[in-house]
Length: 160
Image 1 (cartoon, rainbow, N blue to C red):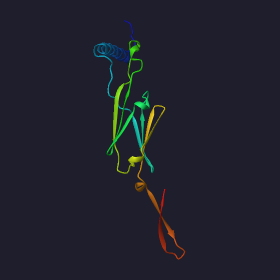
Image 2: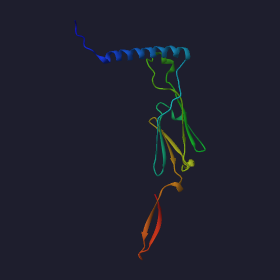
Image 3: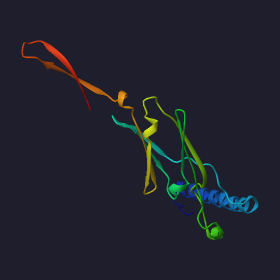
Image 4: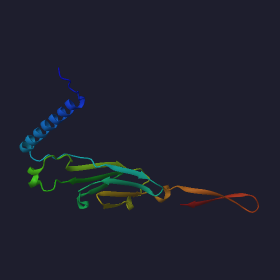
């Protein structure tokens, strides 16, 4: 009788390889029948606020900034665009396409404190940065208490 060393992960890895081959061949078959696989995707967005305003940073790799549309309607800001698969005619050479291509749209509700007349946007290294400044009257103010020489107190307001 021979002693066989057991490897509990060997069967798991074999099953994983089988699943990948099955999905891969099913994907290739469906691609030929239905055409290119594109879908709606949602870019990742960081939103942060400071005393001056709100900043949105959206990851848009391989999206031409000219193809990005920023719409403002009421208190709703919408980012729209499309990431296109480059060299679609050479798609036969691809072994796997995991990134999502196609149209995207993200919508954000803006607070009333945003000065919608002075919103700016810039794109650098695949990151779209949209700055939403706060209205001057909604920016935080600090009130300092001044002491007069006679010992009475008076308040003064200063803006940051």
